[in-house]
Image 1 (spheres, rainbow over the protein chains, first blue to last red):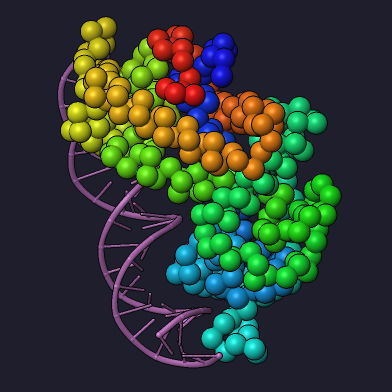
Image 2: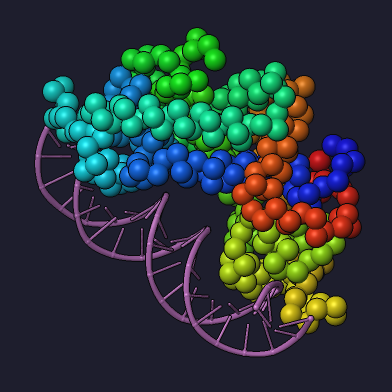
Length: 172
Length: 172
DNA sequence: TATTGTTATACTCTATAACTATA
DNA sequence: TATAGTTATAGAGTATAACAATA
C-alpha cells in the first residue's frame, strides 16, 4: 500500500471499516430528504423494498433479510401500517406468522422514494468513473451478500424462493 | 443493471445504501473481537489511528476528521485517557485547545489492533479477486473523502498539514 | 419443545443546549 | 463576538428477556 497521496483522513485512508462508515454516513445524510415521509426513514424504505420483492413476506424473514432484530420489525411495521403503506395478513399455512403486504399507496411511496434514492446514489457515486461504478457496485453486492451470510444466520437466504419482482430499482 | 443472478437480498441488491450498511455491519461484527480491549470499540480505535497520524491533534480537529460531534469526543477521550492510551496536552499556541497525544501503551495498542483489523479486512474482502481489491479500496477511498467533504464542514480537511506518520496501517 | 410475534425494559450511540475559558 | 472544551440531558436506534399463540 503506497502512502503517496495527500491523506485527508490521516491514518485511516486504507481502513475498510472507516471508509465504509464514512461513505455510508454521507449516503445517509444525502438520503435524508428522499425518505422524509416514510416512518423509520431508510430502514422503513428497506422494509418496503423487501416487501415489494419478497415472495415470503413474514416478519421474521424480513428481519433476517434486513439484518435486524424481530423486535425492531414489530415497531417498524406498526408505524408503516399506521401510515397506510403496508398491511399485515395472517399466513394461511402458519397461523403464527403474519405476512407483510404493500398497499397501493405503499407501492407508490416505495417507487417514488426509490427514484429519489437513485438520484442520491448517483450523487454519492459521482467521484467514480462511469465504468468504475458498475464494477464497484458489483463488488459491494458480493461483499454485502458475504457479510449477510456470515454475520446473520447462515440459513437466512435459502428459505426464500425467487423474488416476485425481478427488477432492481424502481427507476434505475 | 442486469438482474440475472439469484437475488439473496430481494429488491435491495442494487441499493448502494443497503449494500454499504450490510458490508459495514459484517465488518463491525467481525471486528468486535479485534478492538475488544479498546474503550469505545472501533470508534476508540479510529481516534487512536487519527491521533497517531495527525499533526494537529486537538479534539475538534479529530472530531471533524472522524465525522463525530465534539461532545462525543469528550467522553471518548476521557475513556481512552483513563485506560492510559492517550493523554491530553494544552496547546501552547491556543490555550483553549487540548492536543491528544498517544502514550507508548496507546501506540502499542493501536498497532496491535491495527494488525488484527488488517486480518479482519482481508477476511471481509475475501469475496473479491486479488486485483479487484485494490481497485475497490481506491474507489471507496474516494467515496469516503467525497462524503466527508460534503457531509461535514467543507473546511475540515484544509486545516491539517501533512501527517507525521505517513505509513498507512501498522502491519499491512 | 421450538417458533412467530408482541411487549416491556435497558443499553448504546448520538444530538442539543447551556456553561466556562480562552481568543 | 466567536471558538474549544465540558457537562447534562434528551432522543433515536438497538438488543435482551419474558410472555402468548401456534407448530
